[in-house]
Length: 69
Image 1 (cartoon, rainbow, N blue to C red):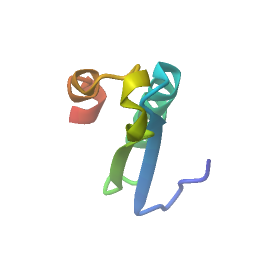
Image 2 (image 1 turned 180 degrees about the horizontal axis):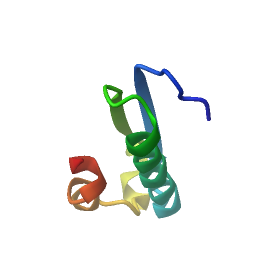
Image 3 (image 1 turned 60 degrees about the horizontal axis):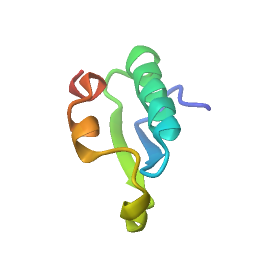
Image 4 (image 1 turned 90 degrees about the vertical axis):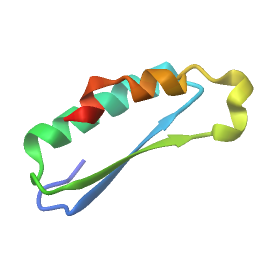
């Protein structure tokens, strides 16, 4: 992924896959370490229409320390 000089980033994870959330966390942490300090970042939950198959609970996301950098 190329992000040098980026003004914004959108990181997307699939609510039906904890693995995608884990990978999204790693990308957010990478961006926090390496990208422009003024970077605007959004973490986006995808497939919200598949709530019955949800693996990533809203509470898990809200309590994730990487979001409170």
